[in-house]
Amino acid sequence: MTNLANSTSTAIPLNLNDSKNALEPRELLARTLEKIEGAYAYSTIRAYKADFGKFIEFCEERNEDSLPALPSLIADFIIELSNDKRSSAGIRRALCGISTIHKLNRFADPTKDPDVTIEMRRMHRKLGRSSSQAGSINADTLDKLLIATDDSIRGIRDRALLLVAYDTLCRRSELVSLQVKDVKTNIKNEIEKSSILLRKSKTDQDSTGKWLHLSSRAHLALVEWMKELPEGQENLIVGIDRGGSISRSSLNSGQVNRIYKRIARDAGLDELVIEGISGHSMRVGAAQDLLNSGASMPIIMQRGRWSKTDTVMRYVENAQMGI
Image (tube, rainbow, N blue to C red):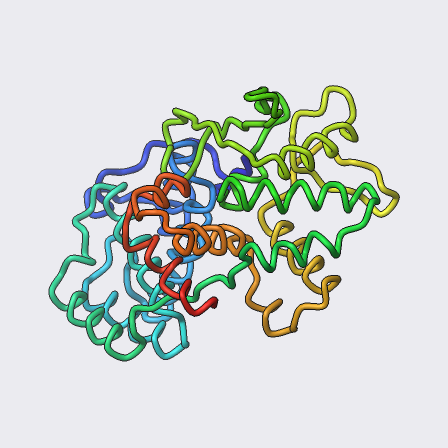
């Protein structure tokens, strides 16, 4: 994991006001992030760094302390983010980061102050609570994407990626974490299928692991792809260079988005549809297809490894309209 803190390990002061040698906010943030590496997801730490870094800049411009911060200053920060057209979800994320960094340094949480609560209510009335929803890649769209792939090494990889993503409802971070050694083939009723062990997910931070089962079509695509992998390959979903050579390292999450969009363009999809496609589009489409097939909410939550009903509802609320 990349060290986001870029600093040596030093004990964090319990209270900035108790020490004349207290660290500057930027250094304290860096050391806090270093302290929590391995305990929080990389994407979470990255968000804390970006959001709290912006908050430090905001405070410096006003010659105010950011650690600990006054509630009135955070309320002003919310107003600035709102005026900068940050989404309500982005503002909530920034507030969560401010809260967490304070608590990790044993400061009182200023985001719980009534002034901050009032400003958040005002922000939600102004911007709403909705967050952008990834475009859907349902079964019909998936078929169009599969037809657009060819028999090159890249096409073989792309078919495996598309079908595994749809069958498993994996988040993009989960897809790129899959390992070759965790693919298990089994035969039932003379039909050969595959299962993949997902070692860790967003809702399984303790790495209990979960077996994800593939359809026959996904199984065949995965077998075809694994035949192309070099001996000793660890990562299952990997990049391919311009010369057609398979990389040893896994894709990053952003590359999954770009692959989906590239295949969608090859399939001739409308550019507005392509613009809405993201690394979660397969997950959205598969969840909507489950709902339309009659699956219950508990079944959908179990398949997609969701822990909150409202999260699932955001995914499936447009299923009946095919959005």
